Length: 219
Image (cartoon, rainbow, N blue to C red; front, side):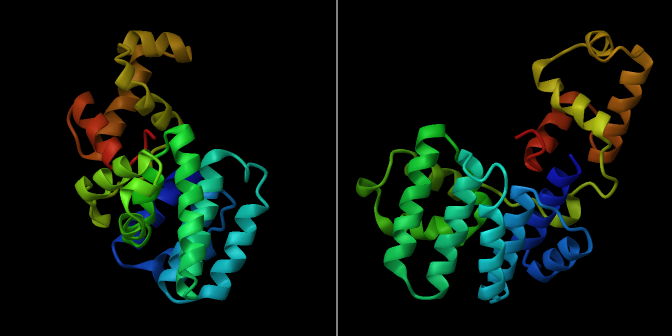
């Protein structure tokens, strides 16, 4: 959960135009999760540090889950971005096409717009007729996504149990049902939910779900 929140924070900083802050944060608190490493590599590319980004790509390839769909797409997209910096457009297009093929098989979309405009612009340039069907969905999502300002992210991180409770509201469990699920009192669940509302700056479950989706905490 800590790695997830760290990666979300890093992505927001990078897309907000502060890649140097991402590199600094991930240097102070190293993470070997796929998402955090991807953000480190993307930030180094944004700063023009291609050789260091290549090292990060190699680290992604050495993760235990490197061949799972999402880590594989991240590695392909980082490779595509690297190829672009070296002017290897044919290799870039090949890697993007491979990433879209994996995404089409597993219906993975957000990873492309999470990468930023560099990759989605390249997808648009390739031309829809030659691409997997999911490419159109990726481009529509990228066009319609509004960027959440980094300053609106929770400054007080949610605890592991608060995150667990936050994940469940979309299923519409009652507080009593949540209490039974976690073998705690209803008052304890109510306290966790109250803390979630305070940290997310909302007043009810629907707003909490919406805000959590904006931060992509429920993905």
